[in-house]
Amino acid sequence: MDHFGALGTFVLAAQTRSFTEAGRRIGLSASAVGKAVARLEADLGVRLFHRSTRAITLTAEGGLFLERCNRIFAEYEVARNELTLAAGKPQGKLRVGLPQLGTNLMPHLIAFQQAYPDVELELEFSDRLVNVIEEGFDAVMRIGDVEDSRLVMRKLNGYSHRLLASPTYLARHGVPDQPSDLSAHSCLRYRYPSSGKLDPWPLVTNDQEGMPDVPRSATANAIEPLLAMAEAGLGIACLPDFSVEEAVATGRLVPVLEAYVRDYRTFSILWPWSRQPLPKIKAFVDFMAKRLG
Image 1: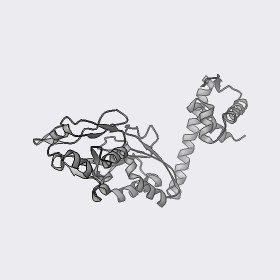
Image 2: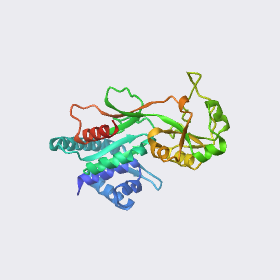
Image 3: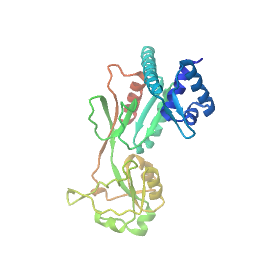
Image 4: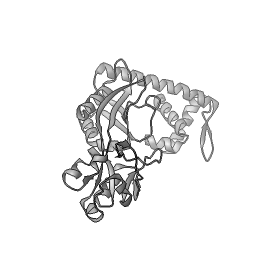
């Protein structure tokens, strides 16, 4: 019996509470997962799951066994990491958390994957504030400063937002001269996926930080749709400068109200503190820092 494989199948079934989902993740049928668990139960002489037509739940013995299995796999990961350190070669799975706008970093992430083909990137894009250590991330890229003594932070190039519209939109509706003019314009707004709140536009009026009543004609929880709608002449959008460089250079978008925008946001990469970071983490941090300042 492949005990290590059986343990992995059991842990997946316990975590997902589903033979079907566990099988999907490892490329087996629900029946095959059920049989593997049954063989493990027979080998151990205990019942690990209560089964019903709707769901599976752990027995008391199954819960105890799951704790032991988690320790076994944790020890395996430690041993694997130690061997990786000994080899000194970046390799293995690298789980990275990024904000939603991090999709614009894909050229850099692709370049990293090409430079380090033995590193398996697992990317999670979300504006949710993840717990780096408890959720098992190797590194995260975040907007703004983060205070956590368990993490090491390295600042990268920051970015600013710009208000932009297409030449055709401005020809039809006019160019706003001051923030209050926006009330007569179609405004394309970004909505945070995690909180559902609209991202405020970083406008300044009368030398005081303030936010005029910016209307909205459309909202999106990603940058790309707003960029596409702005280029299509549907309104004015507030977008990160790095996402609009080409559109501005080619004239597809025109900046507006530049004198009234006050905005700078820091971008950082963070990873769990360690006396000797894993080669895969060090390689990723150094690579991204070189490309992003």
